[in-house]
Length: 103
Image (cartoon, rainbow, N blue to C red; front, side, top):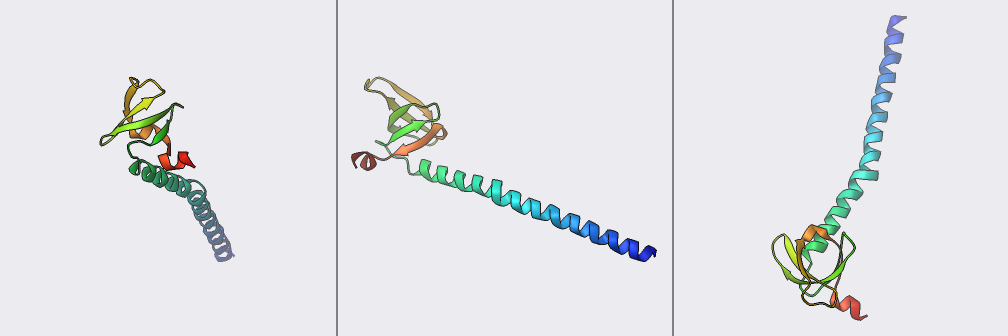
């Protein structure tokens, strides 16, 4: 009788492990993978950034890129040509190319 009880508890542990694995796989496809895709998309957007592009910053300001360095860009805000602010590339949340604006 004890052999039968040991086998049934082994099946219960196996099912528990199977459910844990299924939960981790679901977690990966629902949370981790979409975040990785979004990061790749943002990195591609920042790599494609060029002088003359209109950008939206994470703080909500629109401006035009006038210079690009390694990790920083200089953005000109508004109609006042004296308002030029250096900022990190990571602060850019959206890029609009000049040819997109003409359409």
